[in-house]
Length: 251
Image (cartoon, rainbow, N blue to C red):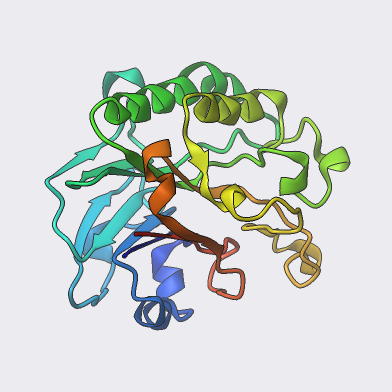
């Protein structure tokens, strides 16, 4: 069994003060993918025995960035999306394993005023899709992270009130549709078809305690991995970030 956990930690240094190491010890994943680490390796004193760390920090200090901690050494590590969409914000980290390629992603938020929507729809989403499809041409793919989109109406508590807002625009949802059209599977939806399951909650208005949230964090896999997909989870009781970790177990 391979346990993969993905978590937007909203700042790794802050998460370390909020029980991050206890969470990792209890969950004991084989691969831990982090988004929005907002730090460089030299800024973080972190001790995870048995794990090797691979980082892709943003050039801008205290912003974005991804990291993967893994018990098994990958065959290769690749950072970014190449010339398709130069990644100076540390948003994509790819590790190659014998059975699959693993990609963790922190998709750009289009912003309250939708200032980055055109970039997201015309550049980022097509570039990321091309990246995972290129990987999938040679072996199965697992991609996980904060995709910054609620795919369906059941993926957020107030779809009518948020239609056209960041994270629930037609363009962003179409970008996720295009990934699924390539054959990738939203693992959580392989087990759960009901609404009310969210991975992000605003800090405002006690949204988390009221479960007034959004499902914007995903683990998706190539169809070849479906037969070995034992479970997919949202670890909603885990605090320390405005996001909950998501996880899959592959046989």
